[in-house]
Image (cartoon, rainbow, N blue to C red; front, side, top):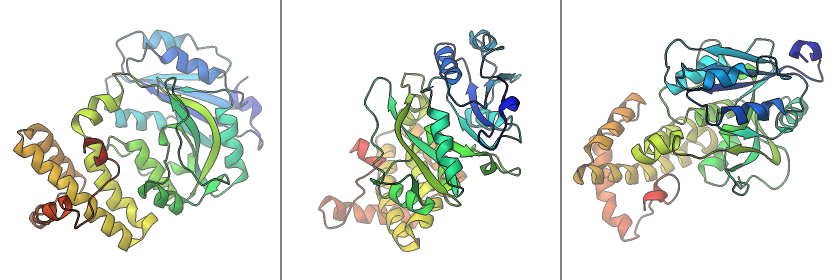
Length: 329
């Protein structure tokens, strides 16, 4: 059944986009989970980022699949965020909703239909998130408010920065209208570009909730988190960027400024420790990235972090306790 054959107000065209690079190990299972979707007007777009393994052969297996698959291939390897943007650009203009499905993740058959049901009933929503699990683990508890299927966008941002609720941006369905013609959907300066997209959309719209575990994030040694987050700690400087950019939207200027100062002090002390311990490579990466993101610290901010150090250690002043620095305490 082709997408156009079921086009109707009841079943608007929805698209799953899968950017993939050398994903032969898991791609077949991922694409099968798309084929199992019970939503009747669905299109699957797969963009092969010039893979050198068996990825193209796996994609070719689905040329005549029940859920139509449109296959594309880059002539050369693109950086991951650029490739994701290239994949999103392939979404046809008549589509109303879309999600990006990583080439190693899985979705249950009702994923799309349940997400779109919430979107169709709430015109103010820009994005819908579902519950999910990692590998064979339990459902991740997002700590959403106990009732309701909608959280006002700015409230969702506030709950996120206060470490009260999660934003599972890897398993989210967006309105196609969130993709603007004059800017990439994903910020190519960031590693957590999916989170950035969710936060940006929530500045102008609300968050819908599906309180069912309908997706799996597969963790393995080739995950981006294993490759760059755990080793290079990029989420440290990106968190400062997110606080600066989106904190005032959800928290208000005063609370955001206080949170930024608290986090920045401890983060800058972490950079100083790295430099003293000879970890110059990571230190240089962070300084360069902070400057690129417009968050390069001043000499006064370093002095403030150092002056605050003994007071924080003696508990005379509060210190940052939450994500992401808690993991290294």
